[in-house]
Image 1 (cartoon, rainbow, N blue to C red):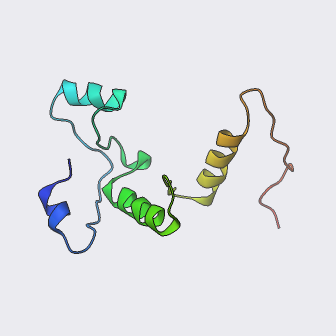
Image 2 (cartoon, rainbow, N blue to C red):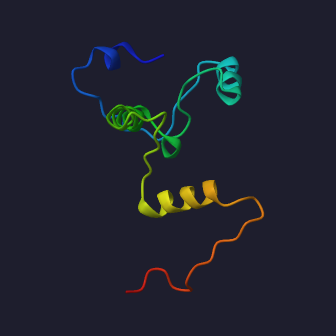
Image 3 (cartoon, rainbow, N blue to C red):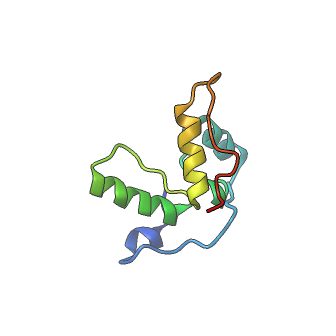
Length: 98
């Protein structure tokens, strides 16, 4: 459940925190089981990032969206999503040198 101030804001609030709390153990269990929507740690997303993802989803008419903090994170996520469990990735020995 979004905070009332977030729902009433004209502009999307910027959430500047790394950690989020749960009011009780039941919320933690529900979060881990996928039945309670919340945020756990800023690296895994926060309300500001989710708002941006929802805007991109609307623009692209997409089912979902993932915004990451770096290009390397995006590339790694894409590779891990596309390569099978026993698959291989072929790369050069030096990916960053010009």
